[in-house]
Structure formats: structure tokens, C-alpha cells
Length: 118
Image (cartoon, rainbow, N blue to C red):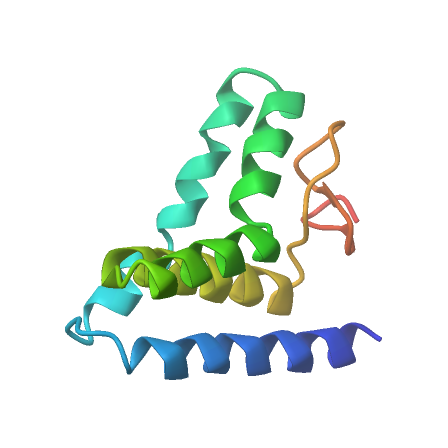
């Protein structure tokens, strides 16, 4: 099952890359911003619950889709880019086995336990 999920997430990552090609940004913008959603982990400096909440909000694909659609209707390429980056990043994370976080610990995700202490 993990392989099937990974393949599906890689396909969604490629879809985001395809969508990015239609935006008016230089090619280097995509890889430069791809890891920016990891800034949401700053909440873990306060406590695991806040960290998980911030992480899950930023890594939720529905939010990425809503931001992209909002950008489409407002003719805002910046909002469209934001949605695509969030979507691509979430897909990349899930393809690598990193899921949405539970409140108790960073390594406890909806896709299973990650890290050294599996």
C-alpha cells in the first residue's frame, strides 16, 4: 500500500510541476520555494500540539487547492503559485512517507511512524 500511495503522490507532484509551467515565473522559483512550507514547523519550538496544528494546516492539500482556485478567479499568479507550491510540497512529503502529524510527537503521522524509532 505504501508503494501505491508513493506513486500516486509522485503523480500529483508532477501535476503541480505541470501547472507551474503555465505560470509567468522563472523555472528556478519552483525549487527555490519548494521547501518553504517547512517553515510551518516553527510551532514545534513551542510544543508538539501547536507544531502539529501549524504543520497540518500548511500541508493540507485542500488549502492548497483553495488558494490556487482563489488565485485563478482573482487572476493572481502569486496566489496560484502559492497553491501549487503547497500542493507540490505536500505531495513530495507524502511520497517520501511524511504524513500529517498527530499532536503527541513529530514522528507520529497519519502514514505511520517515521524516523529512527519506527
